[in-house]
Image (cartoon, rainbow, N blue to C red; front, side, top):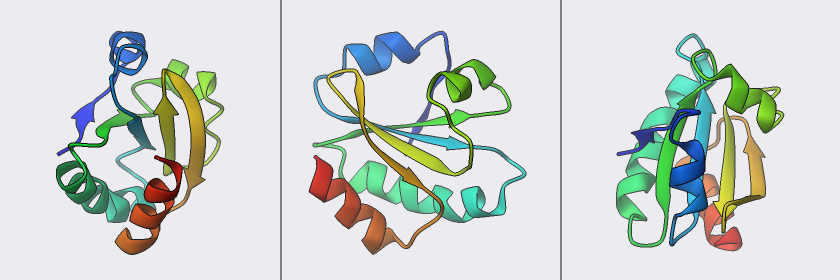
Length: 105
């Protein structure tokens, strides 16, 4: 299951990770975010040996949303070595998200 990410722990979590980190930027009122959430949680479990997964509520963490120019949600950003390396916007089926991640890990 994905863990919560905040501005207070972001740099520590993402900057010191020894494997890629996927961050799901979402909001509780967002229908596509709610549809994607269980898929992200499944992949967090299934890909846990290769990837750390976190969720960031854009309403509570506006600074992080602005920092990474999150204009639409859901937005998923894959970080490698502390740097954003791939951005995905919008809800998608599990197979598509997994293939997208596999291609960029």
